[in-house]
Length: 375
Image (tube, rainbow, N blue to C red; front, side, top):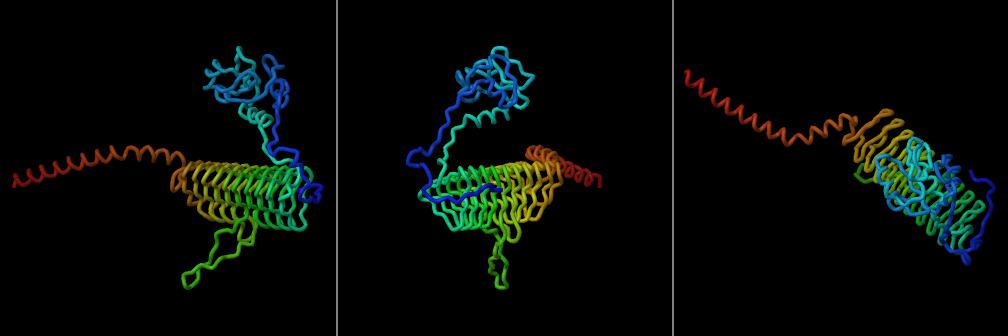
């Protein structure tokens, strides 16, 4: 995971001569951008682009994009010099960059123009290093970073101010860790991982054994957390270490802010977890799963591959692959939609029921009166 590690010492940095914010001022011709995203230019391919912006905000020299044809009318008023479009979209009055996926191309080009605020290569003099620490070349450690013993960090990894890394932690290459992240002992993090501020990786799982007297005895959490390559984890996320074994976040998973992942959870490749999701212990989430905001999963269940779970759903049992569920408790999406429609009709239905009850009561009264009259 970590090629050609070398030992570094605090103070091997250029903070005295470099500003913390490293700005990249970029100017590219449309032809160069087309080559970068493997697209085709219709119009002047020598237009110089200095920034990317939305349709309404873009100015001369800037590139915009049309990901949804319903916004095409807005292009009549744009000041952009060029626009990214799908191959079947023709806009004679504008120079266009045609690609199969305009939104993806926009994201790729935006990466080129993004301003990067990172500490320069080297180790700030305030960094605290434990014993037997190895740091790969061209990595950057900002102020007041703390590294425990036997830490391994790959090449070109950027660690911002205030990050705490425990003993025996392994971090890959091209990793970006924002301020005040805590990575506790024995955790393993792959390559090209991004961890946003306030996140805690490897805190104790929530495990207690009840005693005969009604007290709770803490179960030592001696497992670990493994985070594979290309994972991005938002701000203030907590991922607990396993009681035994590992909590495992597989390759390409994207996790939003304020998510809680409990001990021994497994999340499959390229799944998306939106803000405020809670996943209870020992639940296995498959690959390419989408958990919308505020979804709650109980423990010890299986979520199949390619499952989509709607916002605020409470999932109390396993979900088969390729399912779409919503609600609390979660049910099939189409059934949930029908139940929501029925729920909205309840007030009117109650009025109808009361009316019918009154009519039945009146009929019963009249029938009783008629029966007594016949007697």
